[in-house]
Length: 80
Image (cartoon, rainbow, N blue to C red):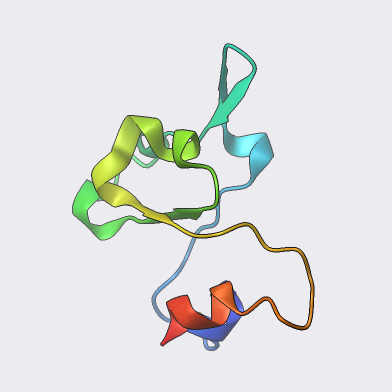
């Protein structure tokens, strides 16, 4: 989805995945404090699990889970 939103890589320079999360009570949480050299208002988290951006709710965009089905258009809607 990131490649669709920013195909030339001009705006999105870093991606966080599960290995970049902090684990809290068996939950994987994305922590924007990892980017201490960036303004927090310039960062977003797109995830289907709201607790994933629990530390940074104002930076989170919740989406529905994606199941790779022909009728699953959730990620397309976020790009429009």
